[in-house]
Image (tube, rainbow, N blue to C red):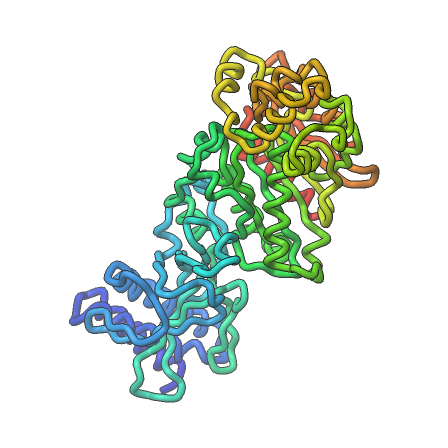
Length: 513
């Protein structure tokens, strides 16, 4: 049968399916197979028409099959009168089967403000969700909502067995961006937004963010660094750090935009940090450092990958301050702002002294090449000193292990603690909110800690329209902008600068540097 005849047959099967003549699913399957055969032609116009019909037929088959299947795995499946052989191509082994799938166009884009990224082509874009890794240590780097991936599906005949069931191929379009039909290569359709949107829709992080501010156990158990895609030793980690009482879902717009830009998707891999925001600022910095250390020990224990030396940090609000401190050299500045004696002079357990020393003394985190700070209160926030801030501060962070260590040391060594912070340490009233107060002496010392000369960092700040005080409602402009930045941008925005279109465009511009 010639390509033209195959195309005519495909159109005939489509007409039968639309008119309800017999089984629609079986008719659409036959349509997809005949259209596939018609794609193998040197006639571009005929091939394009066949590709469009084949894609439509595949979509119709999937629209009927997906609701009837609880999970998908390689092997034979029978859905009504339709028999298929499911085949995975280029799908990583940790996308554990069976997994759930949805057509990408059926996944709402509410999380991204309606913005969807992708491109047309052959096949039907899908969103897939799997439980992911079950074994340690990779399980600890997998989001709790599971592994999500954007796939593309198509139907093709078995080339070796004429009477065998057609193949339903599920492929990862990042690794397989085209398929050969005879001598013609056809580009695959793809959607880079749907799987993440689906994963966010079922995530519980939004409800847990506030609990992380007051020491909730659930977010504590989920704390760590998470990979939103397969680790690639040659792609630069883009490490996203959320702010006070928040969660990694705030990065939905930015993550979607990065994945939607082909050049950035090829160069960057997205990591997101989850941490309890009840701990003091310096303790939060240490925790994030430890989460990154654990991830690197698992992914690249010998430090051989190019990714290890080219990470970019992006932090919002308190996460921006944490990111800055991860790029800074403390020296003795922070220690001297809190203590009047060296660590070895303290009357305390070795464990407590070691913990407190690691909190107050640190080096730039190795392998970070650039940092971006969004609406970060580098010079403190007046909101932390308001009545609400003080009331909230009274219930935040008292259960943190770092706070207990400071409290024990301050109680046993009162004369070793500077008077300005002695009561805070002894009573355990030191937490993420008190350490953001503008008058806090340790915070003032931390303010002077900037990344080393020559290290590129960028600031993005918001100002509410018509606000004469020049603030985003939480962080004043003069606190969000710091000297030495490679670039600074001020946008009209409240504190949710991370969702501002201009701010996102600026981050993409910076990443392209």
